Amino acid sequence: MATFNYVLGKKKDNDRYPVYLRITNRNTNTTISLDMEVVKSEWNEAGQRISIRRADDYDTRIEKEKNNDFLDSLIIRAKEVEKELKHRGVLNEMTAAQIKKAILEYSPNAKKTEGNGDFVQYWYGIAMETPKSQTKYQYALKAVINYHIAVKGIDRIYFRDITTDWVRGFLAYIKSGYQFVQGHGTQQHYKGLSPWSVNTYASCLKKVLNCAIDSDKLSADVMRGFRNFKPNIVRSHPYTLTIDDLRELLHYPFQTMRQKMVRDLFIFSFCTMGMNLTDIYHIDKKAIKWSGDAGEIKYIRNKTAKEIIVLINSHAEQLRKLIVLYASASKRNGWNTKTNSQRYFAFDYNYSTYKVFAGNCRKVVRQIRDIMGYDDHFTFYTARDSWSTILSDDYQLGQEYSDAGLGHSTKSLAGNHYIAVNFDKLFEVHADMLQRLFE
Image 1: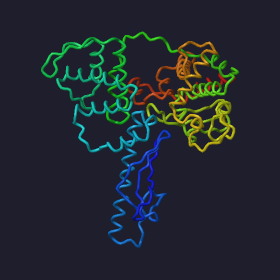
Image 2: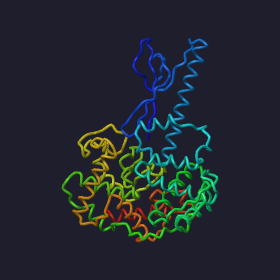
Image 3: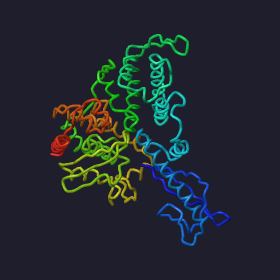
Image 4: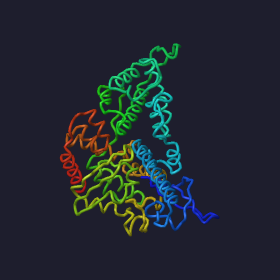
């Protein structure tokens, strides 16, 4: 989570100090320069504002109140931008400079009818915040606009246009292949799409719709359009491990510290209903609580910005011992140091960024795969897939339970399944999984 606080710069010739808004995220920081200078003795660091004194005259008091109102409004603006970035699932991967740019460009009162409509502008925003997937989002958006031209005759798309029938129509449109359509007075022909392209465009649309639903820009009802959609792609089942496989992995005598660490984190991911590696890296100390043979883990999932709660009702002490070697608060962690990090794990002591950490983990995962003789499709994500598969195969719980445990969007869940999830049953089954794993 990003942090915002005001700091004073170097003293100027007039014995006053300039005020800056400092932005910190992902071990990066930057500042926004404000057109404001203060006397240091009048700056309230704890309150993040200028102190108003009884001795101040009327004009001085008005000026200070005006500046304090500006400081409050800028923090509110920064928090609104942070909330929007969190809804898009991109906050944890952004640098402080990127967040600064988003704050400076933020305009809550801007007309939402500019360009190709507010839905198109929102889509562009999602694409810009996911650089690695930007190309596929752009191609998917082109298909969306082409469809809207075909059915409405215009390229401007607004949130009010997005309905269940609109979504269903778009999916049928890309699945059947493009036809001759009228666009801006000229005949345009688009080639048919492969099943893989259909699936990619549908996935992009679903991601944008989920973000819009979580931001309360759309109703979850629009997801009904996906109910009978099948992209005609034959997918191989994900590579998964059984409880016996996981127990063998848990007790295997790996030789290097990194191999043991990645193995332990893999088991931790399984034991937390498939926590992603990025969430493991960023999870803070307050998120994990241990109490004897029980524990509670409460964190915000990076991808969906949703709060996830995992109850460890069995063998919490064994799980705690498994990861304490890498904890920031431990005097005997893997790097033989006690860090002051607010994060639960001390990974940032050796790995300054998540990108470096994830890259090293992927290398070690391949080593573990070769040592254990696993399939080439074995990845850290296998822990997540294994939990979901065991839940379905061993305990006969439906997709809605898997979605709830894995932290998929709850609004999308309601829109797709209309089935109430019994979380007591889910945690009971999860406890039995841990019982079998640690026995």
